[in-house]
Image (cartoon, rainbow, N blue to C red; front, side, top):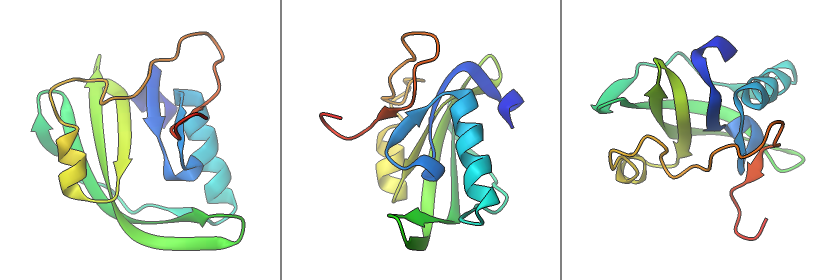
Length: 126
């Protein structure tokens, strides 16, 4: 999976809710969640919604809080650079996902500013 993500890629994942992760961190988070049996996403069928931007929707099961699990529909908006995943965001509905499709490949996500930067929280003030 990591070979599909740009080395400077920044992604959201339901395996680490509320964080923006690097290519290595997102793969580690997904693998850890899958090992615990708390993360499952069926196969995707991306739809091109703009130059270098695709949209995917699927049901997903993931951990909520220390003891909860949810099973719900989500939408992922992703951009590519150099034929690799550059940015990816997760949304609760299609309309909100598409509202971030303004032609900008960063999709509103921050860049990794220094080597080894850990996942940044998406929560204000965090």
